[in-house]
Amino acid sequence: MKKVLTPFRVGLLVIVALGILFGFLTFSKKGGMEKDEAVEVFAYFKDASGLGKKSRVQIAGIPVGEIISIELVGLRAKVTIRIKREIGVRKNASLTKRSESLLGDYMIDLVPGTEDFPPIENGEEITSVLDAPGMESVMGSLQLIAQDVQQVTRSLRNVLGGDKGQASLESIVANLTTLAAAVDKTVRDSAARLDQILGNIEDISGDVRRVTNKEQANISNIVANIDAISKDVRDVMATVKRVVGENEGEVQGGVASVKDTLAKLDRTLANVEDISKNIKEGKGPVGALVSNERLGQKLSDTLEDVSDFAGRLTGMELELGVRTDYLVNQGAAKIFISGRLMPKPDKYYLIEAVDDPRGSVETILIQNNPPAAGEPAVQKQLRTRETLKFSAQFAKRYSFLTLRLGIIESTGGLGLDLNVPIKFFYYSRWLEDALVVKVDAFNFSVEHLTLPRLRATVRFTPFEHVYVNVGIDDALNAPNRDALTNKLISGRDFFVGAGVYFTDSDLKSLLPLLPSP
Image (spheres, rainbow, N blue to C red):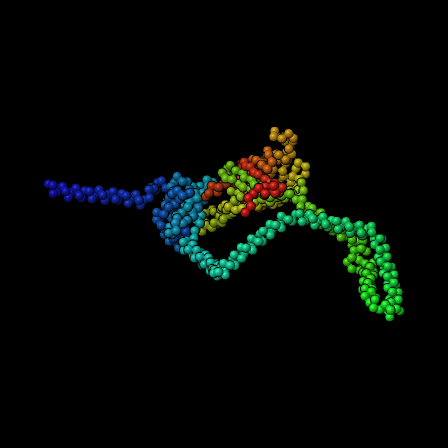
């Protein structure tokens, strides 16, 4: 009896093990999703390399489906996928093939679509497909980049290699150090030297103006007197020569040196006579300057204009500032670095660099081949890209109102500032610029905005060099977010922030306190 039960038990155990293994394989094959709890759809890919059965379909890194079959239809790959029905996939959904690792494995990213489109049914096609390049093209690009890098390093080795290249590099560094020191010294000394030069030019212009306007008659008399004196001296010298010639035998030895001296004096007086004659006739630069009143006036006016321009240049005030605004709906900070050049109290030029978390929005065209019924062959998608924006504005103030015009965050725009006088408890007097209401309008021709971008800011400066602000950005448009990243592309957002600013006089007082290298 025992000999019969033992084989029976072993066979029963084998049958149970085979049943468990069959159930496990069946469950793994189905992927854990029944047909009644999932929807089966298909899409056409130009390149399905790296995809296979059981490859993941995910949203935001979370698996929501899997590939159940891949077959060749014509010259394209037909990929059938199964997606959880609870996801609510719409007919405007899109698929993107994305690399899962460097080993060549790929997965599919799913954008389920928007609620204004009807749900997709079993057996329908997802027409919006974005193919990613395969690892072959990526490795080819990397190979080309490696070749370029190798050529650059070979050139650097030829130029900088060896003792000669090292000596050349050390010489370049030394020259740059010397040049930097010379430029620094020149910048520090330029202001004082420019003031001194302008003072000298102003003195010269005053002297020239007095000479040309008031002393012209006296100069003419002086020139005439010099001419008469030179004639008299010439007559005297002729008489002296005649006397010396008549008594040559007696005084020849004693007056030889006197004759030489007189000859030199005669030549000198002749040169003086020629010079005074040229000046009187207006020949040469000095003669033209003395005799031509119009030329002297022009020179005086030119020197005054140069002095006025230099005075305005040295009188400009520079203000540097840094501001940070926290965007509530965006959940990120926006940073401004600004420089304001003020030639006059009622006019300034503003230049800003802006790090906006919204970035710039670009339109991507996706071609559906073949297009679905009732849908265009080419669809547009908005994608955000991080970039640095710039502003350059000209501002003019009229009493309590300041108007601004120029470029605001890399687009044309305009704005105004309303200065509200208030009395703050820290001060005993009214402050004119402590409270400012700022309004900016820009992005007038951006495609994805229904209305221009309007920003309103209330800025309060309780203490010098420090201010706080609060406001609303893009107040006229409804919030619009990126379907993939959930980042705010456009629309109203509230913000709070603070900033600091310093003028050039403040910076000059801080520079001696900074450590020097």
